[in-house]
Length: 231
Image 1 (cartoon, rainbow, N blue to C red):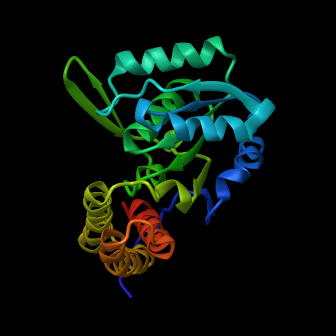
Image 2: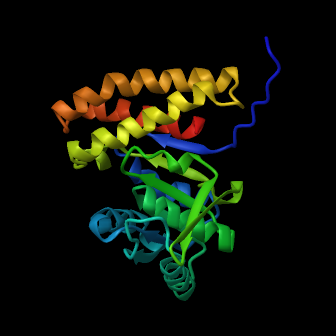
């Protein structure tokens, strides 16, 4: 066996249909008492579902995320809103852009994130963040930006169109493939990557054929989780 380093960050995952119902428990687990729910305008209905489940733990919603690489101006607006409502925790629900905003907020404030992804980006599993200022994107790595808890509720992916599900799932598979030949690859990451490829290769054709196939969607979400982990 060749020498290697395996340095996987710790995280908590709640996986399965209907697991959004466990959001209050996960917010409490990370120490939150007033969580602001962050989303894009197109995913405001998901944010409202999260808000309703949180009840007294919710500090309201912020649906101002834009579909691009976290402009610092928008990040500042989100941070100001969170401050005004007295938030001590962020719930980010939606795609990679929303998760990216949560990471930017965590980087600035140190407050914990609970992530609820609705596509197969996998960014909720990585310490990688990106911010765009004056048209220039800057990226970095910091474990402070990683969500403390991630909820994978397959029911939130059933409305994702095939034209988005397919490319998003293939992107997750690309993360797995890249992990197999990365310079810092190790046996544990390789096992996770191979399993991610297997799950996605099996699930994606079924998802495209029938977007309401819960079992296929669940397998795709599982593969995306592994893809983000090995990234």
